[in-house]
Image (cartoon, rainbow over all chains, first blue to last red; front, side, top):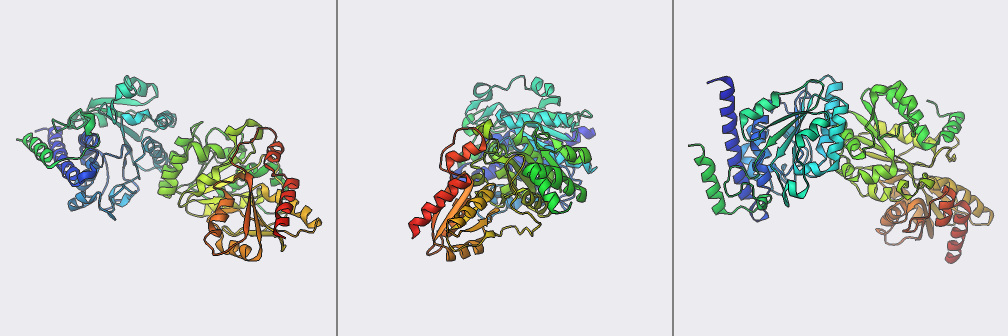
Length: 277
Length: 325
């Protein structure tokens, strides 16, 4: 098996484990519900990032030379927290405590020592912060790269375009934005709510180097992350499916925030496990 | 940089903004490696030319994009920089308020916001460019220190103090060119402590920003009329000086707060909030903009509509004092 094929297999397995953990978390969230759809759409992205692309040492989490990753679409906690466990930042047992009163993961506070680089939550904020981090890394001569994950609905925010404009202006080729293009925001089809199509052209016209790929294919994602251009910020448009991996949740806007029943959990788990046979 | 009487006069001519960006910031940049000054396309207006020329690598113009500016400032601060971010007070405190809340108040990023032309300095530009609610917004945010200098010297001292402390600050610069002098000589700036500028056993006047010099003139007029006011400069709006206020409340039966700001949520409110926690305290009169935007015009014209000129202040304080008799 080629090295790339081995990597792809390993990352695909990692994504499957994250997806199972996400289900466990959604069930643990109980009657409050959780953001199921948009977490499931970015799981392969996170697996590829934490499993291969990002450079970090969980035993030396504050190393100034580490890469920074911020999920600006911060409601993807069901995907991010299991990914942090995969990466060794938090013990696996802690995953289900993500909503526990007094817990260090609750409400997603900034804690770089466990890989939480930013207190996210409000959309359209983190790209600008990433630009500040990228400017700092360049000036300080650090090899750190900055990765910002954004939702496609999030691109409705004007502040995001201020960020896109300025990252090019400053020539930040140590900055990568990833768009989780699942085509659904809270109220439904992004093209019906506020159209974003010809997104690739929009971003290219802002001076970004644009890569587009199947956001659920680990190999395609890896190749997209590697496809960079000197002197230009890089954006990966990952074509994804909201609710990916659960047949009855896929492309269903009502699963944006959903209360998972035991029956749904059992069926979904069966689908994800069955998929591996 | 020396605090000589000649310099103090020169800085007064430059105004608070000119003195902070033309004098204090270059001085800070000279002594600090990891410092950045960010502006949203107001480098020329703010008098940053000298800074930009001397320290181009410590400067960033983000264009007319205040929200992006605060985000970039936070990202730089997280990587160890002391960041000054500046534009009109009205834009920094309102347009980018959520970025300030998330990055500075929640995460505590080491960013110093410098809001210029606060109050009604941009008088004829109109209400869009006034900052008459900024103290209310900024004061509600945890972790922020909120400062409001009375003159150029105090503004310079505050900027230097902010550079040396770790944590977010909002520095509210009032007035345009040529700022009246309150401190003619060097003095020790103590953050968080009220400064008594005049002693008296009649009404206690607590003022901030440009209203300190108006109140100085007003209380001098009142002295001639036999009303002996105490006058305090409340340069730190948050945290409030509880000890200093307690002393004032114990000594005076009437407190008059004066600010170039809405009376809702500003300095007067900060005074009243603390006063209301005490079992008894003096009556308070709130002077400022009375929950209304005035007509645009010259700054004097605007102040007249709100009763904030020296003679109007004196008249009003005398009236209120009569009620105490």
